[in-house]
Length: 526
Image 1 (cartoon, rainbow, N blue to C red):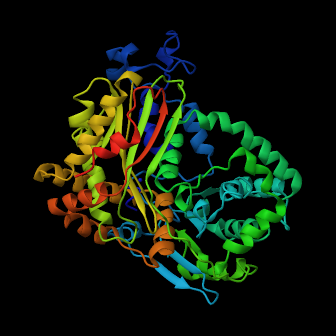
Image 2 (cartoon, rainbow, N blue to C red):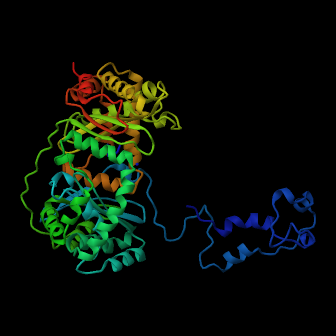
Image 3 (spheres, rainbow, N blue to C red):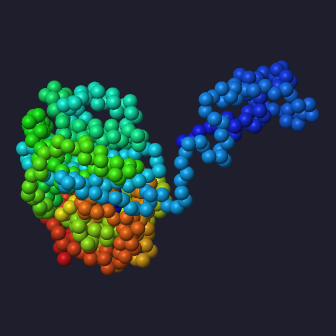
């Protein structure tokens, strides 16, 4: 929830008076501006047409005739539509923060939250990802994401797509460094079919050789486009530098030379190892809990037995990754990061408040305080140095380690000045924090937490991730109380501890003017 730190129907009865007002009359037949094909507008009608003592004969318009023949009832907007259940007053279930969790006999967990919406969301969260990979199979979880909605033992990929289209369901899969998520949105009555489809692709995927070949070709075609996405490249590079290309340092995306290692047998072996009951959580929003438990027991009946896997702890080392190559934008991209609080650390919430306090964005970003215009990076970097193109704080939070950093861009000849400016601002975090900026940062973080509750999809993801990480769910009210408790001393403590870890550096572009790693590291030596 923290990291992250988010139709109208026209009815004929209401429109009728307005339609009558502008309907044709015998006196309008000689005026081409007043006709059935060209309904008059208020600015072309004379006063006599509004105030004539002789009431014109009324002729129903085409729109009124349509509604008169419509099979739907003509209900005024101030009356309840037939068949819609009465909703009790009070806070909706989505905002209450209460969810139900059950553990099945095989160890699989099920979590759900009720909703008044006719649309439901379901997801399957799996404890796997690139941190569990090796240099030989690095990227296999992302490739499995690409292969997720393919042929199974029970249906072809064509039938799978056709069935989901017929239901109007939106099905997707995503992978990260620690989790893989299969999710779907559909009308509530279609949840059994949709969850059955997710169970099928998770348990019975065939990984046909022809489909593997096609997906390899598609993936290779997307590599140039991803190479141009500098924010993606920088985040991958800063993780590689921070964790020395192991565990959390492994790339999310498979290198081209690993693609042919992802055979049908390799993918099936990966699924057998990680797609086990105790590593999985089924989450639902808008589904009755008992029904979701019953469906989960029915659908996930072919999972392999749990394997006792040793989880290699993340090893933060610090370091650098540099790519000296002029990019399309002609800018130098630079990021520095440090190790900080994990999901289970008591300093997690203060670290998130610190990120809000630093804020940042682009030099030409429009907006007000809600977009961070009063954050430190805006006030002390973007509004002070015209040669800075962007400066943004970021964090990547994991179960046993995390990164906090600043990512900035400038022209190549100003890259040394950029490094110095960002380093000074990072060191300033260990000093005094003004009450007004602390209050603003806490308010922004609480706002982000509560705004996330407005999205059913984000709520689904929050529930699943909390259960798979903590085994329980914290409400927004509980998290807000933790945010309000953050003090200036907490911010200073977190920043001081963070800056004592080795610095991690990622840089892309023309790096001719960028200082050496040891020179940058000396900026943070006390």
